[in-house]
Structure formats: structure tokens, C-alpha cells
Image (tube, rainbow, N blue to C red; front, side, top):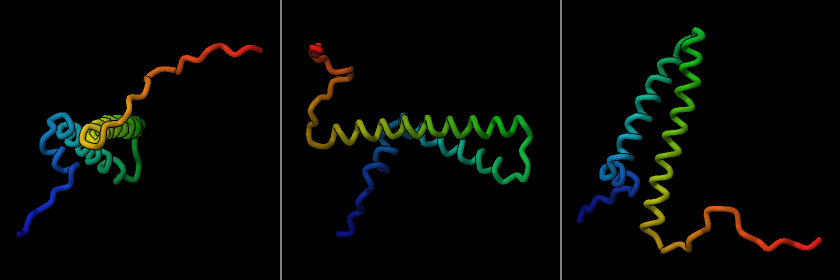
Amino acid sequence: MNEQKQDPQELLLQTDEELHNLAAMHHELEDRLHTLTAKHYLSEPEHLEEVTLKKRKLQLKDRMEDILRRHRQGQGSPMPSVPQGPAVRPHART
């Protein structure tokens, strides 16, 4: 009767290889960033690395969120398809 309910995101981390790899890379970048921010002074190359790490972490986070969003949409009720470009509208007369 002691059934463990697993968070869908955690389950997906275990079953989706791409999401798992992205999360691992995100964690590695977080560790390196923590090491840099613990320093009292950053050299110019270290500062550049810090900025680059933050950008790469955001990119990874965005990709992970895309995977989670696609999974939620696939698991939930079917959503109507949304056109991916600008809507075509007839020309208005002026």
C-alpha cells in the first residue's frame, strides 16, 4: 500500500536520454559557475567564462523546458494546432 508516486519530470529525466544529458551538462556548468563565483576576484578570462557559462546554462534550460513542454502536450488533452507563421489576412482597404 506504500506506493511511491514519482514526479513526472523526474520520471522523464530517467527515461529521456536527451533530457538526462542536458540536465547533467546543466549541473556541470552550475558547479563550475559556483567555483567561479566563490572567488573574490575574477580575471578577465574568468569573467568571460562566467558570462559564457551563464548563457550556456540558459540555453540548456530552454532546451530542457522544450522537451518537458512537448511531453506535457503529448500526455495531456490534444491541443489544437497553432499556425507557426504570421496569420494570412486579406489586405485592408484604406
